[in-house]
Figure 1: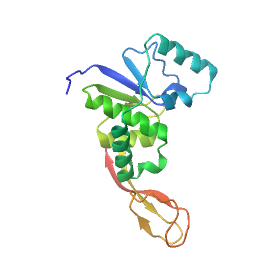
Figure 2: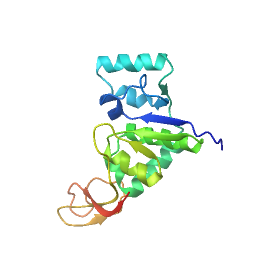
Figure 3: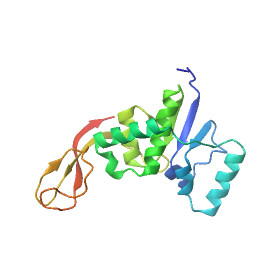
Length: 175
């Protein structure tokens, strides 16, 4: 593995929407194509296009094995139900960069992304929120009949009564 401890930022959609500008923040900046596709504001698109053309923002698709690893971990923790494909891709990109010896920091205000970051030992910073102070593990349950399911069971309706499943915290730990 390369021992390259250069500090880099991985941007999720919330970072861009809340004003993180790669042109004025020192360091290398990465994001994914799915993040770019979620930005609809014309002014932000212009900033992103300029950042990309100046080499201040790099677009990278994470390797399939890193996406699958992140999906597996998110399923184990129960976060999979609140993470979008874009969120999973951002986490996978950061984890891939970390495996290459970089010191990535995900810029996000998404609590589920932050929660998975703590469980994967990935650094994160928020823009407008304080960020999480505890990490959570979730359990899936039926609010109608009370049956519980492992978070790895990717189902949305109770097998007993058919009610829509919800999730709740079953374990909290301070960060």
